[in-house]
Structure formats: C-alpha cells, structure tokens
Image 1 (cartoon, rainbow, N blue to C red):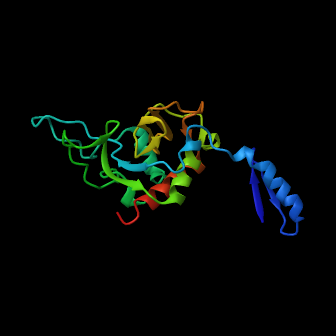
Image 2 (image 1 turned 90 degrees about the vertical axis):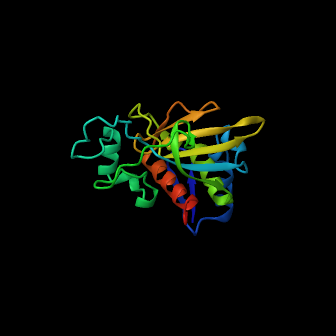
Image 3 (image 1 turned 180 degrees about the vertical axis):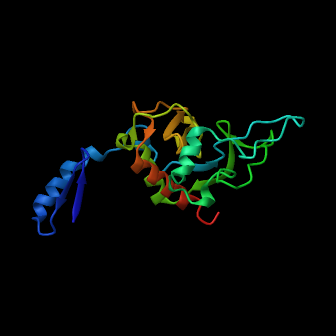
Length: 214
C-alpha cells in the first residue's frame, strides 16, 4: 500500500491498483516532498543534539528568606507543560527539578557549558543516518510548524547542524514547553516558529533515540 502526501491529504492506493498508475502517481509526488533550504543540503552533515536545562532557579542571597513550601517556582508555561504530561518526554529526558516533589536543580556553575545561554545537561553527536534523515526531514518541512502561541523560550533541546560553506553551524533551540523553535546563524525558512503536535512527537522520538542508553 502506498501513501502519498503533498497538501496535507493522503491518497491511499489499494494493493490491487495498477502498478503503472501507482508508479505515475509516485513520480508526480516527488517534487512536493523536497526539503526546504538550507536543510536540503544537510542530510549528511555533522550534527549534535543537546539536552538543556530549560529553567534555572534565580540566584538568591544567603541571607534571603527560604523559598515557600511550594518549592521551586516555575514559569507558568513550564507548569502547564508538566501538568499536561511534560509533552510525552520520559522522566529520564526531563530537565531535573521539574517534577512535583523533586529537588530543584543545583545552581549552575559559572564555567558550566551552555548552548545559547541554556545549561547543557548532556550532548550526543548524531552518527545514525536514519536519525540524521529524520532531523532534516523534521526541520525541512513547513508543515511541521505553525504560528507560535507564546513568546517564551525555555529550551529543552538544542540542535547544531554543520552548514556547507559556513564555519558556524545552524543552531536551533527547541522549546517543547513553549511549543516553538528559535534559529541562530542562518535564516529560518518559514514564517512560523510554533511546533505542531505531530512535530512535538517527532522531537521526542528523536531525543529518545539519540540519548538511548546515555
């Protein structure tokens, strides 16, 4: 059975369809699935995925009164994200200190590595060709993005993808709690930066596979 996707609609070919007709339709659909620049040249590029601490508790002077009994005060967007199930992320991929009852994250040392000002929890180079293809396919189609519903940026994931003829990688912050992305070192090719529900699931799947066993 063959599935064709061009304009958001799926054409399902029966297994009994004539092979010639199916082949013709597949050929006609090739152009509509092409990747947007610059992602169309990044399939074999060097890639790194970062797990990020999306929120840091503010530094409090030693003489300041203790925090309220409610614990770490999270931004409302992150609170809503956690209450909604943390966007399907398994506990092992959640930034520390976000789950109710857990200890708040320790203060970040000044020398701690960061990715666009977010503390790095872990990072992994991507060597698997299938995962690389899934990453550029996710970023390379406008259908994965919609108008942003908020203007916050509490990033849980970061992507660095090498660019041809550019010493700086294409860096992208991904905030599942704010449901949007932010690009650096290249022109974002779409008018929208919001993440669709389907794209959110794809980001989670990629993060699970990249950091499996780490």
